[in-house]
Image 1 (cartoon, one colour):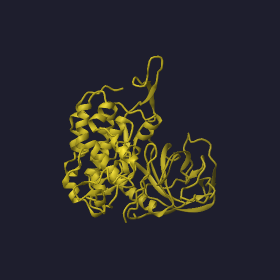
Image 2 (image 1 turned 135 degrees about the vertical axis):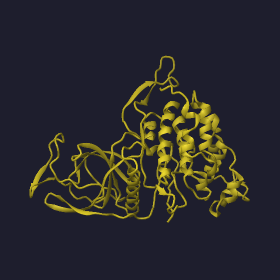
Image 3 (image 1 turned 90 degrees about the horizontal axis):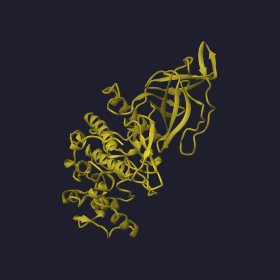
Image 4 (image 1 turned 30 degrees about the vertical axis):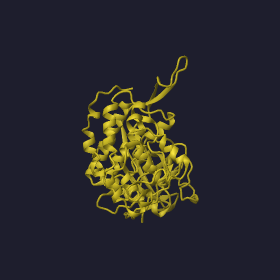
Length: 430
């Protein structure tokens, strides 16, 4: 079944990508004891702890049964109408994890910050909705995270590390290291002020290293976007924003104290040898070959990387659109004409975007004058970057043209991109 992608057009952009992958297998069943009752759980990443928490975990509601410590189980609640797990702060997920806060929410479920009593550390637990297609996607994500961790014991390849997983009250729970905010959240809380080109260089180097590692393992992420790139640290500093400040008025912006990032959300990742559904990626980062129905493989990730870098430099998504023909017209406005070789190979579902199979049906096929104006407002890529980048603009523009080549076969690979002169220029941090 093809993946279903929902799009809308709010002020900034939609952030919804729904997946319907093949089902994975669940292994190892064991019982977890709560308040004298038994709850059935499936586990894959480690044993359920029923021992007394170590020092430093604070006062806990412990009792004993047959010599083993028990932590109070939360009352049973029905899931909400969308299948989300309902909870209260301070409750437990199994006897091991105490809920501290809600870190985020998406179509897949919720991410909770929890205290791991056994490891004596904070973790992030992705609690998947009690909906079969999301449970299936979660099991695939677990398999992908295992494959990534198998060849990267230290986490140096910038992919989030799986610590544990289990099934709790019909919700797959994926336990990972706790990280900082996403690059998108950082931009949003910074009033969409762009990052400096030097920070963009550091982010893009790490992102490309992570993508290169995935591609070595024949994995394609298929959903690269700023929301799925997390800062490792939550710390930041405030500096004077010279571009916004004027005489007598000072404006400040946030700058991450550390530039380390990690890639998350592998629920849509696909091995190159496995089935490829026809539509992948969140709308704004979707490659032209996907829209034209030409099939996709590793290069679709590099197109997404190019879109991400422009967004980090400018503060806004490069292609803020909700419809395929408008999206393709925006691409041509920013990058030039789509090659005839791609238009000729477009599948039957994409023919409605074309005139006699030779060119885009634009602006004749536009759905509204607003759509036409949205396309006309876009500058060429060079001009867009020059508006926001004060140094290194030339090499960055050249890198972006390599990542945003229309023809997938001509696009830079992750390894090729890492050798680009942009990454050899000296940094002027801040």
